[in-house]
Structure formats: C-alpha cells, structure tokens
Amino acid sequence: MNIPETRDSVELFLYDTAGKDIFSDIVTAHLHDVSMVAYVYDASNEASFQHITRWHEMVQSSNKKKIPGVLIANKMDLRDRNLVETSLGEELAQKLSLTYFECSAKDMQQTDVPFQHLAKAFYDSQMNPSMVGEQQLVAEDDDE
Ligand SMILES: Nc1nc2c(ncn2[C@@H]2O[C@H](COP(=O)(O)OP(=O)(O)OP(=O)(O)O)[C@@H](O)[C@H]2O)c(=O)[nH]1
Ligand SMILES: [Mg+2]
Image (cartoon, rainbow, N blue to C red; front, side):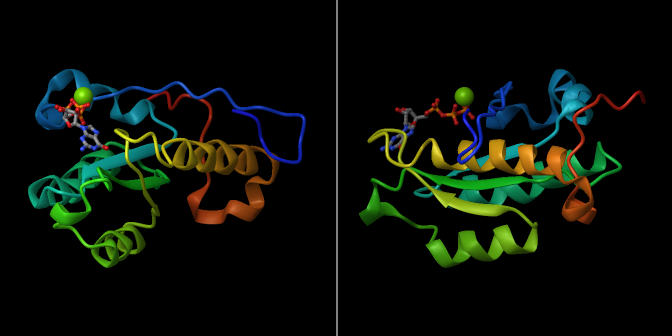
C-alpha cells in the first residue's frame, strides 16, 4: 500500500482466520508472529462483537509486546439490523487501544481504509520508533 505524501509503500501479508478457529492449534501457534491485527466483527450480530475480546486476549497472551491493530465493524449496509451500535464499537476499540472503523464488504464501502491505516501505522513505527512508545510495532520475528 502506498504511504500518502511519501514515495514509499508497505506490503501487507494478511493471514485470515475463521472466527470459529479461535482455539485451533494452527492459529494460536502463529499468533506470536503477527505485527498487527485487524479484528473484524459483524455489526448485525452481537455474538460476533462479543468474541472480539476473546480474540484480543488470545493475541495478547501470545505476545510480550502490545500488538496494535484496528477494530472493524463490517456489514454496515444492514443498518436496520445493526444490533451493535457505533458507540459500543468505539468504546471497545478505546478499551483495547485499537482504532475503530466501519465498512461494508458487500457494498465495497470503506474496506481499504483500515488497511491503509495499518500500513501507515507500521510505516510510522519503522520511521519513528521512539514516537510510537508503548505501541511500538515489531517487524522482525520474535525468536521465541
Ligand atoms: N450484508 C452483508 N453481508 C456480508 C458482508 N460481508 C460478508 N457478508 C456475508 O456474510 C457471510 C459470511 O461471510 P464470510 O466472508 O464467510 O465471513 P468470515 O468473517 O470470513 O467468516 P468466518 O471465516 O467463518 O469467520 C457471507 O454470506 C457473506 O456474503 C457485508 O458487508 N454485508
Ligand atoms: Mg473467513
């Protein structure tokens, strides 16, 4: 992804896991390799929103450093069925130190924005590691 106002780009390697795979050995074995996480829930499904906290705990318990990321409310096209209010999403994002986004994969609305944010955050962390402080992103593999 191109980084605005620079001639640089960041290549994202995305590993997609299914929601039901939270306890799968293959998934948990790889959680310590991640630099960042995009937590996606279905805004028309409360259970899907509630599972985010568990995924976040799983990611954090697999890593010594805080793993930065984004919280994405998908299916915003189902406005009439949106059980999970924007304010709840924002609140959870704040609690977990994630940046909140809303999108609709069906309508292809705003789906790039969170990934642009991740690319920029990663770029900034590499260019100015001292400014990122606690949320420093780690590019190199953790050897443990
Ligand atoms: N209305 C609507 N439906 C969507 C949207 N995104 C995905 N879907 C539908 O939701 C269903 C599940 O989509 P998937 O892409 O399989 O979701 P997933 O997050 O990969 O699910 P798991 O891998 O099982 O965790 C499919 O029927 C999609 O067509 C959206 O933005 N709006
Ligand atoms: Mg899937």
